[in-house]
Image (tube, rainbow, N blue to C red; front, side, top):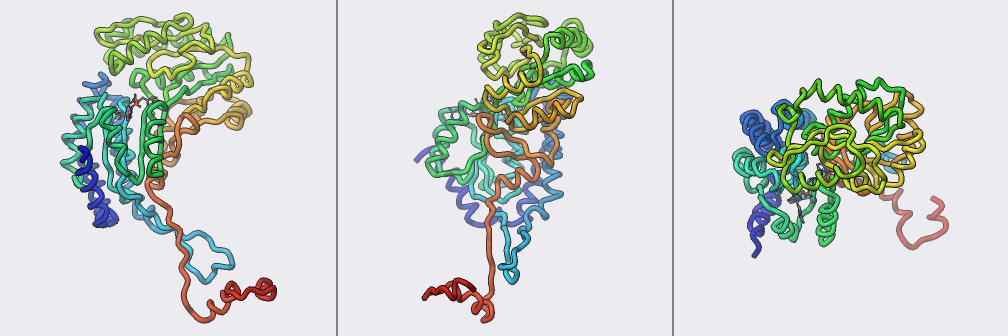
Length: 455
Ligand code: NAD
């Protein structure tokens, strides 16, 4: 017997009892989750501060408020989402019932990442609950304070059989993955995403993989540069660059590069003062491994701005690198820190060629006022999503699906898309047994004849 047998057995029995199929039960659990977020907002902010030295204002916007709004949005729409769909019918089925039922998968597993350790875990959990599933909740062990919060507090608000929390590092998670799940939702690196996908294959378990990658930014000279620089740097520096949709690198002309650096210097001074390390508004790198990895990446090219670091605080100054080569590690690996390389290109076509020669990004950022150039990128590249003249904000639009494509992931969620992700679409044709219908249908029965076929 493994450590997880008992937990899984209880979740399976709870699902089999049918209680999660009851909409009122689901609503109650979601209301409890919302109450948890409201009653423990400060605890959540404190845990995020302890793990990432995250400023309170950032945690409010990107975790606690986002979590509350997510559950409120679900509660507002749930009764409409759960209704069977009635697609328009063709002539052949005019007399029949044609419906699509939204059926829960069963016992699902949600595995979170450390960079937004609460919302990346609990948003999919709320979607899974809404869709009527049981959920094994697995926080990232790397954000240890947030994992402890989830393990200590969430069980006080949710049904413990249906929604157990499991704390596990890589080896225990590998063991957990030996269990049979009916759906797996994973957020984290592409490397581990492949491990999850391979484990899911054993039982053909459907899987959503929310992965990483390098999200490029293209800027042309038609932009208001000050605004563009602010939006790009904000997207890069929120959570100190440890964001799956952080702008990873910039593609622009040599002339734009020079202007970008001048503006960036000014903006950073306005935001963080003369001594960035003493500003309370920049998070820290999660751990020594990632800190050392980033120092390695900063050896690529030439530092045009920033470049300071301090191991005692895992502080890395916002840093812009120029003169990088496509084969430099900083241009090959996902950066996931406050380091922004600029690679110069001649024009939009060059930039598109550069992007298409690499794995599909999670998001593509396009800064231009020219609609034609926007269309060129939208139609000429593949990415999980795209955002024009801003960064990160597309993530918060709950009517848009969020997810990657290719190596940046598969499947999507947020709002209704999350509910759909955790629902099997069960199609159902309903007929009656009336004599008239049977007479019309009888042409399908043997003995076959050309006369019957022509009916
Ligand atoms: P990670 O892959 O190291 O860890 C994520 C989860 O996987 C954790 O819960 C961890 O316990 C588990 N895990 C780690 N190794 C495992 C193994 N060998 N077997 C089974 N489970 C294992 O990822 P991370 O470092 O936590 O997150 C950073 C990466 O995640 C970046 O690439 C980032 O772009 C990506 N990310 C993607 C999204 C998204 O929404 N697409 C969001 C956040 C982060």
